[in-house]
Length: 168
Image (cartoon, rainbow, N blue to C red):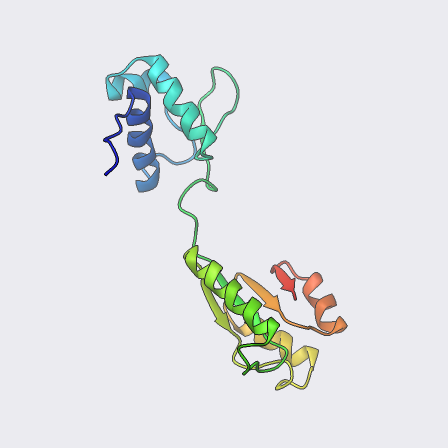
């Protein structure tokens, strides 16, 4: 059993502010140091230390000395990503190196609370027709794609899209 860790006043203040950010209490700009110190009944130095902690975590952005901090959208709860995998062909053999890599990718992305799915059809089933493949990609709600052994035409199409694609 690990010993109980005591939190400093700055860490407790940071936790209170962190919870307020999570619940959406503050959006855009955080109130100033004086107001936060009065609200939490702590010193201004304690609030400044708490704000520095939140800045290092990426929850807040600094706009310079004496200016209020901005709430960072990137630091808030990370949205769960949906990642699609487009296989070249069905890979029934689990001993296949590509199958092992895909299973590892699926496992690691899933551990990070992302959703990973395999496209309903393979490139072979779609006869390597770039238009059919791109229609399948467009109809599948995904934040990113992993394309296994894509043709040059497919990879060029992927490179021109805003949707992130990783080629294996």
